[in-house]
Image 1: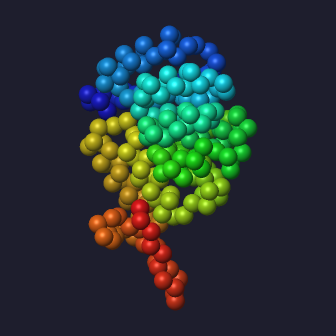
Image 2 (image 1 turned 180 degrees about the vertical axis):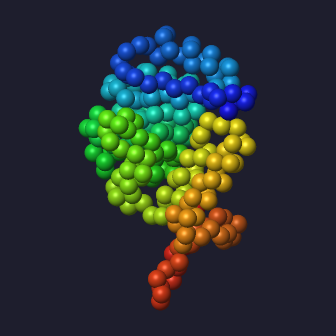
Image 3 (image 1 turned 30 degrees about the horizontal axis):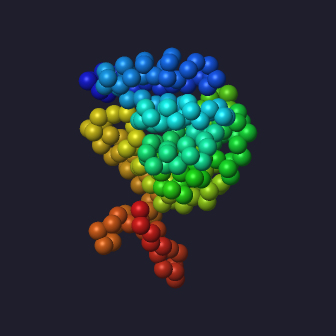
Length: 209
């Protein structure tokens, strides 16, 4: 935690049609940032609000949540700024009527953009992080290497100091080794590469990570 305390960041959520970002909310999040806290903002949950979406990207939050209703221009800005996106596939389908196959995660994966799979309103929607990964695997045909990479990449997006991130990454790597015992990591030509041993008689599958 920043400064040795328990609070590491602040988040904006709730009804996206209440309050004005620049006038009512931004000053408070700017104050939190000046105090050393990270900022996550629910983003593009309301249609036809491109000016607000643009203003939120101008603020350059450390993460954004949802990113459901982005215009093409806003989507291009988000991708260019490389702001990590918290994705909640079950929530997007239930509340915003976005089919799984049309979820923003597909675009983020295609552009290798930082994405963190989350579950919003887990009790109401009866979902868990494991369920969200299951949806992503089935919907987008993710491999063991893809899931392995997504989980480790998400560690870089957590709100923590470097020492804590190192501890979390080590813990995740240990758990992933048990989950994917056949997924090995090696180095080919200076690049990290994952190798999945193939069934007998077939060549192993190799791809850059």
